[in-house]
Amino acid sequence: MSPHLVRALAALLAALAFVRPAAAEVNEVRFARQLGLGYLQFYVMEEQKLVEKHAQRLGLGAVTTRWFPLGTPTAISDALLTGNADIMGVGLPSFLTLWDKTRGNMNVNAIVALNRQPAYLNTRVPNIKSVRDFTDKDRIALPAPKVSVQAIMLEMIAEKTFGKHDVLDRLTVGMSHPDGTAALLAGRTEVTAHFTSAPFQYQQLENPAIHKVLTSYDATEGPNTFSVAATTARFRTDNPQVYKAVLAAIDEANAFIAKSPRETAQIFLKIENARYPVDFIEKLIVDPEFSFAPEPENVMKIYRFMHHVGALKNLPATWQDLFFDDARGLSGS
Image (cartoon, rainbow, N blue to C red; front, side, top):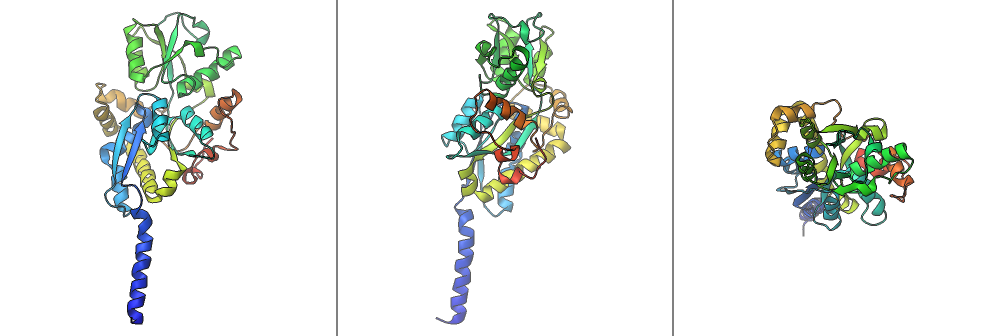
C-alpha cells in the first residue's frame, strides 16, 4: 500500500473517530415541564423548534423533541428519574430536593434558571388577612405539599410568623394550578385559598371575591428564582452536543421573550389552548416583577432553609455547586 493511500486512510479514520461521539448522541430530546409562565422558554422552544435548529447548526442532523406538560412537580421529577424525560422544567424546591437526593448517583444539576416571578397566596375568605387567620376549616391548595415552590415559601413564612415551619402543612392539599383555580373560584369545596403562580393568580384576582394574602417574595424578602431547567449528569456527559443545542435554544428563547413579548404571549396561549386575552399575558411577561433570565436569585437562601428544617441533607458551599459548569460564570445568589 502506498504511503499516500496510508495517509489518506489514516485521515479518514481520524475523521470518523471525530464524528462518532456526535452520531452516538440521542436524536430525540424529551422535555417535561409544569404549567404556566414559569416555563415560558419551553413554550417558545417547542413552537419555534429551537432545539432542532441549533442541533442542525451543530451538525447533529435531524434531532426531534417531545414535550410533556405535567400538572405537579412530583410528576415532573418522576419522569426524569424513571428515564421518561431527559430535561425538566420544574419549580426550584423540587429541583433542590432532586439535587440533594441524587448526589453520588444520577447527579441532577440545573442547566440555568428559567424564571423569577412572585407566587401569590389568594383566598376567598374575607377575614383572612395573614397566615395567622387560617383555621382548621381552611384548606390551602398548592402544586405539591412539602416540595413545591409554594409549599416551601409557605413554610418559610410560617417559621417567621409562628416560629415553627410546618404549622400550616396540615392545611395544604396538592392540586394542579388549573384545578386549584377552579376550586377556589367555584367556592363549593373545602379549598378556601390557593398558593399558585401566573397567570392563574391574576385570573383569580379578577374576581372581586378573591384577595391576595401574601407573595413568595415575602418569604425571601426579595425576588427569588421560581423555576429552573435541569437534567442528569449522565445525559449531559453522553450528549454534549445535544446539551449545547438545548442551552443555545434556551438562550435564544430568552432573547425572543425580551424582544417579542406579544408574540410570546400568543405562543403561550396557543400551546396552552387558553382563553386569556393576549394583552393580559403580555402585560405579565413585561411586568418588572418577572424576569426570564438565566441568573439564579436567592437560591441559597431557600436551600439553607430547606436544609435547616431537615428537608435536605447536603449543604452546597455556593449556588454554583447546584448548576452545571456552563452556568457557573453567571452572577447569582
